[in-house]
Image (cartoon, helix red, strand yellow):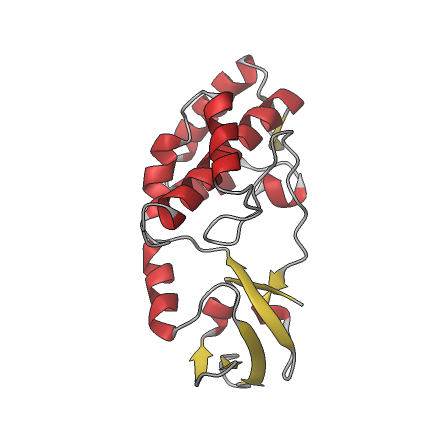
Length: 203
């Protein structure tokens, strides 16, 4: 979450995102604060320190590069790689990660469209917006997802939506805000507002 807006994050929000109890998150944050990875205030939540940000960006870079490797080189599907990459992301070899980056051709995004930080920890800024913010007749490119769950990714596979697709918003249903999308050279598909709120697109 902080990757998006840099604002302090509450323990309750983090607990909900991680699916754990708030007291467990509080204990974890206090340990991280002692290591000077976060600034923690009981009434406001926490925010990464510069040291914490560097550690987090390093892990994000590792995770996303391993996801690219697993999909592009080992043939895994995009819904299979998150848990595997979580195991691989903790390999503490900067040399290995930099060689992996070079081997993959310095990819800018992972299989889910998330930007990959470079070797200096610079995270490319995204121009993508949620599909649910668009109006009828707008035409965009499908660039990423905010929901990385296997269930959601499998659903997209069934609809035929793939990263890089050109999408035209053909209609927005007034009753339930569902989106009818025209895919270039293919049939139209209709997705719910919830799905549209999890798809990232740009011009």
